Image 1: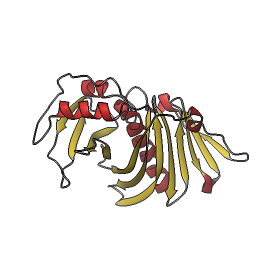
Image 2: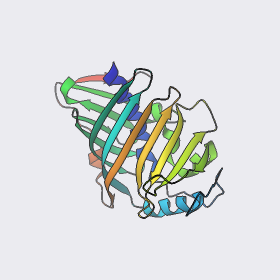
Image 3: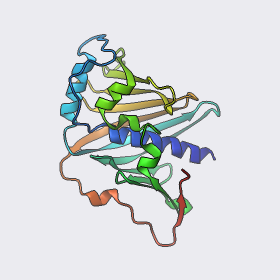
Amino acid sequence: MKNKRLIFISVVVILAFGLSGFSKEIEAQAPASSVKPSGLSLDEILKRLESRYSAPGFSARFFQTSTLKAMDITETASGSMVVKRPGMMRWVYEKPDKQEIVTDGKQLWIHRPADNQVTIGSAPTFFGDGKGASFLSNIQSLRKTFNMTLEKKNASGEYVLKLVPMDKSYDLSSVLLVVSNDSFDIVEVVTYNSYEDETRIELSNIQMEQNLDDAQFKFTIPQGTEVVKMDK
């Protein structure tokens, strides 16, 4: 049960972040809040992000820490990921257990080789219309549904953007995006839900990708693997 819940939290955050980085529709609208502790304003940072993430996709290494506060459980994981607009992702967990999370924007596959099991579901069903963290699918809609503030820079001098939903029915209570102050890569994503559970994903070796094959965002279920359908 512990592992399954942590996996579910991971999927929510993965789909959130994977869909978030590629909106070409970041517009120079006044955000809900544009506090300017030092350096650039929130709107200026969003414009730099738009320029940085204008490529069709990106790849990176990740290190993830998931904490369930009520159970006092913290687990870590690491691996590689690749994302392509619109909504296509492949996350390969290498440690502590091998696992793949793949979506072509329509279908979702979660493959756990150790369990000889693939869980499948509809990405729009589970993460559309505000479910999970799909509100991060583009910056424009995010501004319409979230109060956005620019927090104080962290110890490394990186920008920290805080997102709080206006609609309290969202699954996530807040999101922190940590943005490099020179490359404007999103180097860390931290999410909190209503139970104060935390999922932190640190990204490194970020590469913008121009020629990603859509085929790598499909998953072929190995013969003999148990298939489990997600509940609606």
